Image 1 (tube, helix red, strand yellow):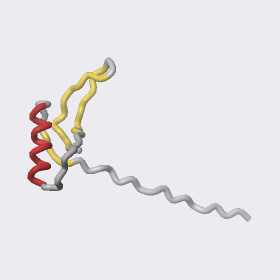
Image 2 (cartoon, helix red, strand yellow; image 1 turned 180 degrees about the vertical axis):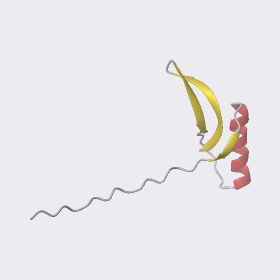
Image 3 (cartoon, helix red, strand yellow; image 1 turned 30 degrees about the vertical axis):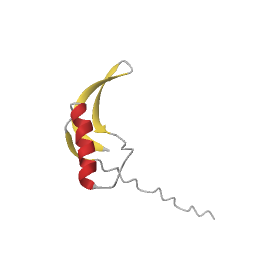
Image 4 (cartoon, helix red, strand yellow; image 1 turned 90 degrees about the horizontal axis):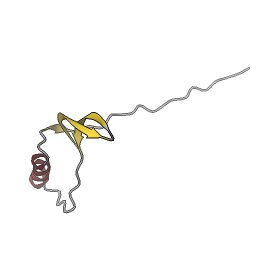
Length: 70
């Protein structure tokens, strides 16, 4: 996924703001320059501006405390 310049979209009868672009490449050869071309091509076709790579949030694990009863 890539972060894009926010754009207004219409979804299920309401205005929303899109900030992410998600696309799949079916012939991925793991060549960075080719993959960049694919992202740029998709963004251009949709009139979007890529502003960065998506970094998923890090979720802290829930640590339970042991309760001691006497």
